[in-house]
Amino acid sequence: MRSYEIVREIFNQCSNNQMRDVSFEEKEVADPEAYVMGFCQGQDAAVEKDQRPDGTWVFDVEIAGLRQRFSFTPLD
Image (cartoon, rainbow, N blue to C red; front, side, top):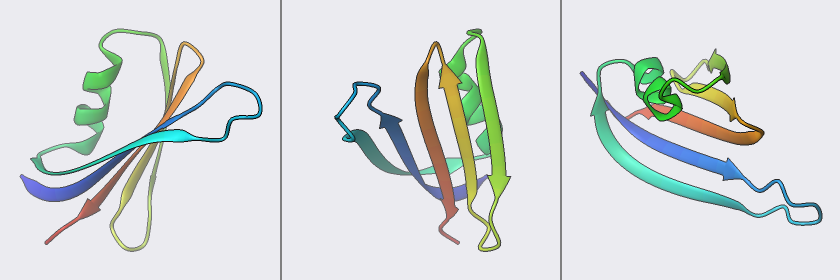
């Protein structure tokens, strides 16, 4: 298990509205990819993942036209 700051962004699909919902939490997670897939729960999801040089994992997820981004930044 590793401690992460998790940022979840939900992008607004409405035209002319660039606002997004953003939530933050600190949590111990064994596998960031499995954590993200838990939000998909059997739905047809497109997931792209990227690891940045600072150790941050970024997952871009699209489920039924809804775009989300999960960022996992290690705390230790």
